Image 1 (cartoon, rainbow over the protein chains, first blue to last red):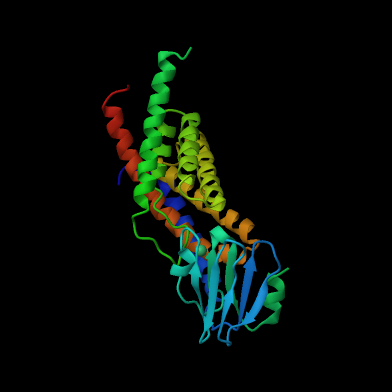
Image 2 (cartoon, rainbow over the protein chains, first blue to last red):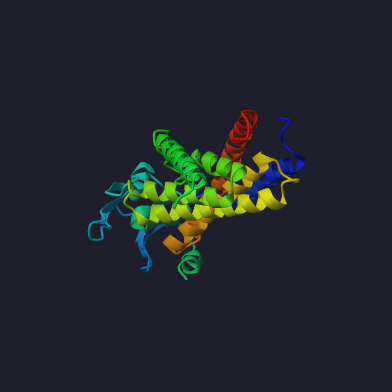
Length: 124
Length: 172
Ligand SMILES: [Zn+2]
């Protein structure tokens, strides 16, 4: 494309490198199977559930319905009445660092590893 | 008394708002990636950008605010409004600045990439504020930056061509 300038190429290469470095950095904590599930609602204190128990959690608040399942060390949103349904369509997560977000209902679920230090650092 | 000039301007702006709404609406039928919430083509940005280039930041600002506000009537959640608005405003501010001061360094494609990058960065920050945590937003950020580059190039390419053709049609 002859309409592009040198600055464009530099900007694009810089942003791609930036994304790549961040991605590799994130990949460091996402490889292993997680052990803990951290569940947050709005600015309330998070709750922690072990990933090896099979359970169904009702995270509903008033009219905002969210049902979370933990099954065979996998976590998924079974049901939600949120508008975008992204949380339900997200499917199963099981690895450390993976997450499910229900933005309309301000709920986030993230899988943590064994390191208790991580949990303390994250929940400051 | 509204002058003929004002009426013309308002008609033009309404037309752009309508086009932006149609593009936003059409985008809902495109497949989405559930694993990566917030990744969109951002076709409506084509309109914001073309208005910014051909008219003024004030006109682009009006088109943006009208589009996001009208669209929020169809989606009940206040958070998605906050999400679109913050991204749109940040992107418009960055593009206005880049167009004015960095026009020699970047073409319209580069400026569009800057806008898309700032758009997604603002959304990452809003997500962090809503969730009260940086952990999840940061895990999405690399893919948001990548998508900003790709959608920024696409939008910029469309706008550059559109602009060229409109200029040819004559300054009306
Ligand atoms: Zn949801």
